[in-house]
Every structure is written in structure tokens, then in C-alpha cells.
Amino acid sequence: HLQRFERYLSVHPGFRAGSEFLRRPDLEQLAPGRYELDGRRLFAIVAADQGRGREKSLLEFHRKYIDIQYLVAGVDLIGWRAIELCDRLATPYDAEKDIGFFNDRPETWLEVPPDHFAILFPEDAHAPLAATGNVRKVVVKVAVEW
Image (tube, rainbow, N blue to C red; front, side, top):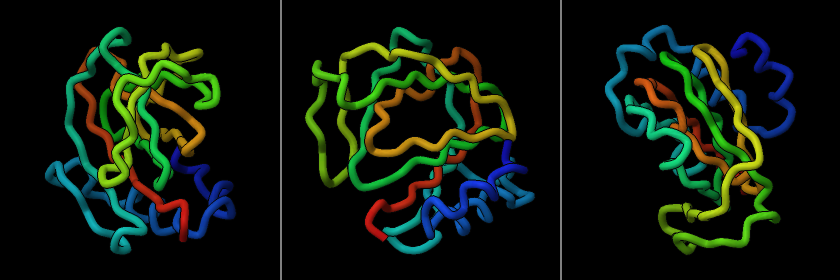
């Protein structure tokens, strides 16, 4: 729950500013898009999406950024698998977009309700938007190299 985010502040110097953005009282009114918080080191993506379902959600991975995925409304389902267990590459890593995809299936699923978050590191392959309903979420992207 976002109220307990303080326990994670020591993990990375960018987490404090990221959590402050997530505490904005106007998150439900923000237009979807990218919000710069600290240049390329820290930014947020506000999204309003329709879930794809488990079968259509591919495992994605990043190398440059940590994801803090926070649910504003709806419930997201995020699949997870340790990246070292993934060996079925679907789309090679694109360094400019900091994303690649695997055809492997998640080992586990995490249901993330409103006001809750999931922190996903580069070693965490993850399949977001695996729910089927409408989802409004904010993904704070925190550069690994600070």
C-alpha cells in the first residue's frame, strides 16, 4: 500500500521523489502521458488502459529503469518470472526504448488493487495489464544508474 512506501526509500535515491509524485491528489485527473520528474533519471507515465488478459500479456524486461507500478483505479494483474529463467526471446532488447519481450510464461501472478504498488527491477521479467478490466495506473521509471 502506498502508505507503507517509506520502508522502501532507502533502496534507491530516486524512490523519494517517485513516491511524492504518486501522492499527488490529482492523479485521477492527470492526462495520460509522460511527466518529467528529474530528466531522464526519473519520470512517470500516466496510463488509462484496458487489460489484455493473461494470454495476451507478454513478459517484458528493462535494463536501465526500475518500474514502480501504482494503481490509481481498477485492478491490475502482473505476471512475474525471474529473468534468468527466461529463454524464449520474443522481441530483442531495444536500448533506446529500454524494453524487450519474452515468450516465456509467468511463474506467478500478482493482483495489484488501487492505492497499491509493485516495484519491478531489471531482473524481474513482468507482464503488466494481464487483468481484463479498465485500469488507470502510473508507472514511475527510476534510472538504475543514478
